[in-house]
Length: 507
Image (cartoon, rainbow, N blue to C red; front, side):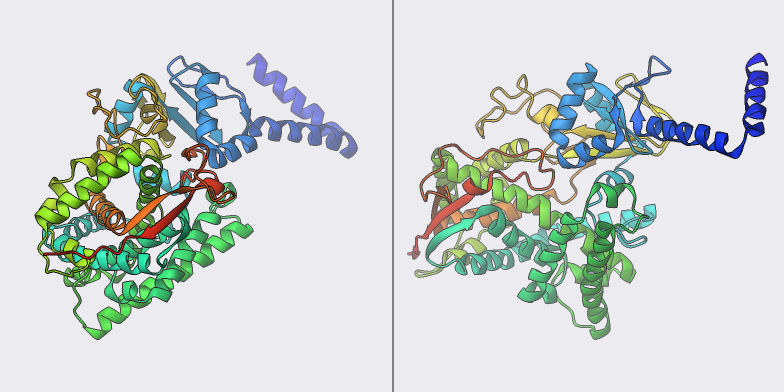
């Protein structure tokens, strides 16, 4: 009561002052309040609350979006804790590490992945009711359709088409030359993603596919801290992001509408959606959302597979030997057949179960070159991770580097070594996710990676080259984990010199 009475006296005294005096008092006070809001004080009211990272909020936001790997590593060291929290302006974010935190994070059903990525990623085309803010029933429908698109029957029919797309792209490179791996390889995999997840009409139109690729790349460029944290503010990046999303929507929606109007039946994923009598916006959202995987995740993984093989001749030789064994023991072809047509005759079961070397290469690439930070939001009541309280509404992040670059689990963690024994610690490898959330498109992704990589190994000789000197690089490219989307290495040493082998098969 004494405190309240004193406060009232102060307020009355302030009101009695002249306008000039009020201004002189109010302006510095307001500035102090704003500064206090922009600064995370680092005071914790309860022992169970994660320690708060001290620092100004604007630099914190910039570091989180532009150099996330370094930011989180430094913050974990500075806090001295396996779990800490920080502010992205008005949002509370809890960062998690360690075996116990990883287990709780991956298995918690109160943490929502869609809400997490909507704010903290921002690089997904956001259209309410189409790709975001979806009802649970609509999300379930999308998951079912993706499962159908990865049925054995559907994938078996898809194999020749994906190989044809890959062959066409490689043919355009010419007999020999030098390419930027992180430009040309993602282009191939965006094409195969369009083929796998949308429609025949889109996949067969090279100009439209190229346009879509440009738009998705533009979406990445316009994803800035401002456009993510303040989506209501008409910043240049936000306006550009809205226009880009609208253009993607127009292309996809036009294709869906034309298919529904024409009644033409095609053997593709869009036909699966049409035959299921899905709402048109479900079809559009399915295609728009899942093409993100082709424009980023699978393309990035494929780029690093080729980079690692080009820089490690011993593993390239092992992969090529396995590809040749697959070709000569599992395919059926006539004399003079192309490698592409011979590969197309190999059954799906062989691609999925007879390639242990490729499986280990994919696994190691996902460990070493996937700069992913899993993002969730606590949509339920307050919960606990490794004994630390996560408030309702708070965001939670877990960096894959915590486990995948852990020297205790993976000695010499930055070394590419597909021969590593698989860890026995729970969740010691989470390349396809873990716990309650795993990649639902992993079957298609694995198959696509194998098809195109085998095609390249059998049709090309290739190695790394430094663009500046034309010679092999002095040091091998290393994944840049601060590049949260593509993990690209230094530009000068991410090139590949290739020469077509022009091998003719004999019966």
